[in-house]
Length: 306
Ligand code: SER
Image (cartoon, rainbow, N blue to C red):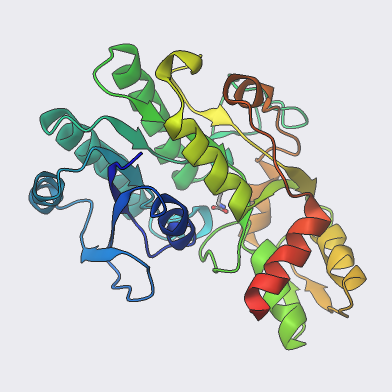
């Protein structure tokens, strides 16, 4: 493949997994506003909102693909709504502008299940449905979905995207509504009681980090003609409640105590899908997840322990 790839927001939950997989066949430069010496590739301090530095990095390194992972997640975004809107939308447009000016071939940008809302038929969420998101994170992601559709439809750019559910990884997310899924694993390993901020029966879609990264890279590597839509694809692996997740962890030999004390994040979660229909992505791209809930818990516990 040998693309010159810039990953923006590489110090977040997903960064190192994208770096590790993409570095196998490509030249990768990771960037973030937070310094990071743990990534296995060249790293550069870069703020997506600083257009001149972004352009300089892309020109100097002859970048032909961008993975834009910069984000403030849904729960934290409610404390900083203006900042969340600016980071998501101006960041997105800076990447768009620089990509047009510097002839970047392809952009990957994750959207989120946060774009859906109470009007989206949450029991079975199809790819193209009414959407009234409840969080500023969701509002700003949805605005960028419309921009993505605009630039793709006009053939001005090639932007590819998946609506990520909660991602289970050994790296901690931070500031998200789905964070409990990782936090519970850490509590089980340390023997601490976990205080869960969601209702014990709140169902949300989740997936293993490797499934999400592999799906993203698969989407980036297929011919554009195989992609039947100009906006993001739904993607999912398994639906689970905090109580069932605790049970799964216990079947792996732990005795996790969970105190359920829901807060404002449960309200956000209530407006998100309980079940997602992702057959469009599976059919177009030929993908399916490798990890169910139990395999995911076991694999991430092993990864944290290693
Ligand atoms: N994991 C994200 C969050 O909880 C959703 O995309 O905000």
